[in-house]
Length: 386
Image (cartoon, rainbow, N blue to C red; front, top):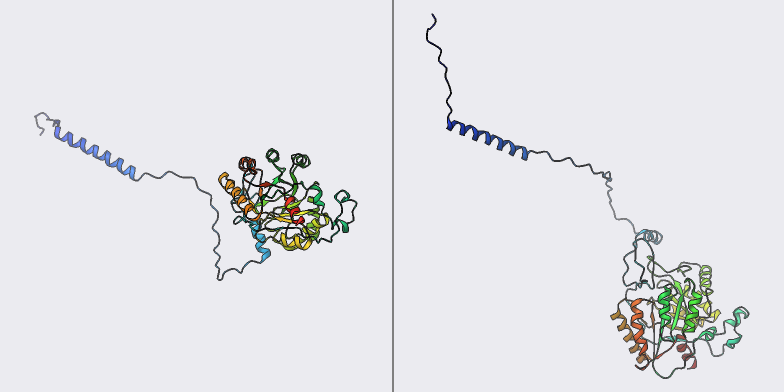
């Protein structure tokens, strides 16, 4: 039996406390969701890096045997050159790994300073000496050329005045033409040594001669370092006698009117007596003198010159082996001290900016300080007179 009472609906009344709880739970859920999303966020995909396949492991049970001299030479040739220290470079040159550089002089373990008198005129007094005006290389047989001193024809005449004598040699002239002109403009007489492979060298030599300087030839010889290029037709220690003679002849015929030669670089070659004997034999035949630049403490130049009868001199001090004005001035002071001690001194410099800056004022006051500036030939002739 159905009830006559009307249906009664239940209505939910808003409860403020309950709403606050629900909102709090919703916010808490959002916070937890964001937190888990941040923690477990996947890392960005980075591009794969191409790598070499792993090398097989090779087990060595014993050390490798030492390489032979030939193998070592091949390995040295493949190795990049070591950085150079104290190499005298042209101002516009910079050493580059793997590429030979053209330098003024090579780096030495330490500067070789010769402080003893080593100037020699070694021909016997009975040797046949022809008057200078009759000496012509193209007409005199080799047997007569050998007995002459052709270099006398090209020596700058200077009479010693009793003061300590200083001979300044400028090496490596002819390549940097601007600085070569500035060196030539310095007061002389000095000895100007021109590189055999310089371009337009004849006109530069003529300018030096007109300025009153003495002419020498700078012949490339093999340095110890493989990273330095000494120039074309260099005299190499491992070359045959025929090749040495051919390269030397090429150099000696590049120009004429010079007193003698000195070595450009050559720390390796000048220490090789057989090679130096080839050089001295040709110098003797042509009647030329030799100046040993002494780029090696083991140089055989003096020994070979005496045996061949070649007039020779030996460098005492390098002026600018370090490109620093303070050190250059210290070297100039060493020259003066040595000249006072042994009566003369021979110094070699190069046409570099700092060298030219230091040399100009030093040369201007050289006579007031009690010295006489002379070319190399004056020292050789002094020994002849004695």
